[in-house]
Picture (cartoon, rainbow, N blue to C red):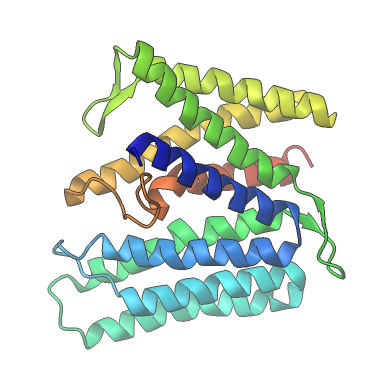
Length: 274
């Protein structure tokens, strides 16, 4: 099987799993994103194995999952929000105390990276689940478009940025961090992302301005999220964040743009276009 065919096959399965989890029961989406959180946390901490910094992989992953679980519980019942805040505070205290006994050379850097992993991965996924409008009784999804739109727009931006950049790319976008990205590719991805936002709004009879803006956000912020992850990998001298998705790299390679786009669209959705 050629690498291109493998990428296409794995990519199709990946897309079907994401879309399928969004369209059906809310708890299925909660579970799938929980798996993404688990794998993402393990992958993130694993990036630092050869670095001078030593994040607390086990404790960071445990608290990252607890953070995610209590955040999801608060979506179903707001009374659990106090538990969510409790886990947040307990995480910092626990990581700090545990570092006392590790005797590492970079204790505060270790605590910081352990904490960053939770913010980088678990928190955006909680917000993503909050965007899903569903019945608290039957768990049936009432409105999946806010969540589905994020993935569609990011995928459109990434795909067409790659295709246009490969065909027309001449001017480097951010050569120091990502030598293959070009301004031509970025503009191509931006235009198709905006077009996708317009078409989603048109066929769902939604606010066109809102979804065109989402298209801009998905492309611009998503590209920046991709560059930030590239900056992390370059600083650690690694090519891919992982190998769990054959032909596509790791979880962070697939979700780097999504993690950055989620909070922006979340606050636009609930506080600007509510």
